[in-house]
Length: 184
Image (cartoon, rainbow, N blue to C red):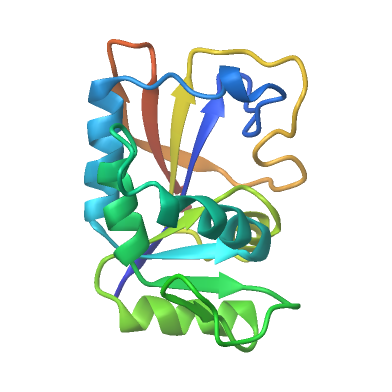
């Protein structure tokens, strides 16, 4: 049975969407290599409509980029499952529409995959999955930045008690935190 992992990069104060694109992420070799390894270990991506549309507009064009090209090859080739109330099939970019009720559809996806299903994004889909108890792990790459404004990653979700599984610091100050929902 596969695992559903919500994965996102955030500022130290929980903002997941930078008010200024030039201040978005700290890109360093160590944490970038780890990010690529995380993608290689994943079976598929699970995306909400907005994230799907945003990523599908960019990643297919990044295969020759000197920094992001190594990610683009993997991301473009991965199967993607898209939760949407407005999109219809066929979808582009190796994507399939999630059909039916989210809890049942995600359970079927987890049964169909033996590896990780990575949820990229922090919007409605990630919130709904967390609220319904469908997330097996939360992976947060915390960047050494504070943004005064911007949406916080899990505003309105909870309470959900988490158990720290691992914390990996990088020279740049980025810290990769892995949590599981606590039991008991």
